[in-house]
Image 1: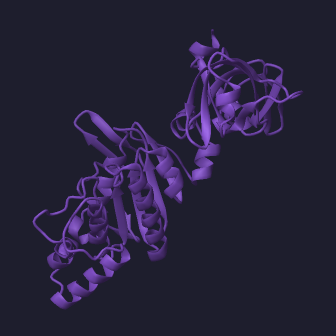
Image 2: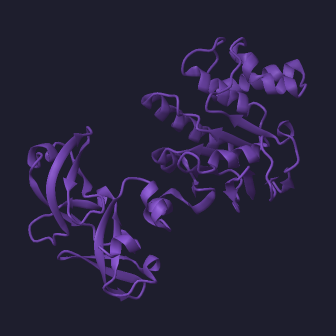
Image 3: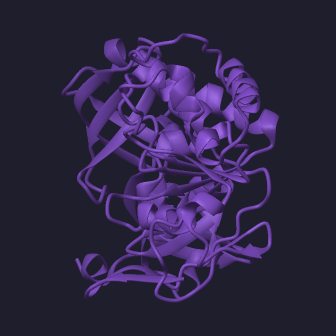
Length: 351
């Protein structure tokens, strides 16, 4: 599917199949094309080429109100002069259902979202918008960054509620967000989008642990990028040299690299730890700052081998505060088989 706005190509050859009953997340930075794709599914925009089908039926030319979709917007788009029940029942009235049927369905929808009040207020607005999307019994539910305006605690609670509802109802759902943790926690599958193209589609663990390119590896979750060298290849595994340590990574991303080539090693903070006695030291550096996070402490460490000059290390509990204050030298070991590597960019490899 292709969609252009003047000279700008918002979507370029995008193809996506969402399985019945799954929650598919469109994840990417602002301006990547994810909301454009959602609007095409909704019928608010027409593609320049390509087709859209819902449950096998072509709907490319079908108006929005006939596509049997429920939509929950970022702004909720509620009618402030209407009661909760009137807002929820709006779509049913537009479909000219009988008053008794509307009342019954509205009651069921409000029970689903655990809300039976009569006036709109605060965080209840999101539940009302969700009930309005569900009451028409849609084939597909579209969620456009619905949690962005909520505080942290309410956001977490609503994420759980929506996921439970989606699974209970078996509702096919397309969810748009730029929040990586939100995508990882909610999704059955994730489509990572950048510059109008889908870079990778997969389960959250696959996206997080086996990214197919540098963009996905960098965009999804926290990651440290370290300079290393390809030492040798053993079948499907590449062995990298990083100081005295040897790190094993999948060979797939290094097919074009020869032994001795510079590579960039992508390591998650949780796959690094202070080196114990006798353990191979991969890198060492100086603690620049500590960030207390309750259950753990984030140590930001100046490291020569890091592409950015620093790495992020997560240390459980109070250990980080007492053992490694700013200015302290620290030696770091890596989990030997949990990283991934890509050929170094040409300008970096030349350094």
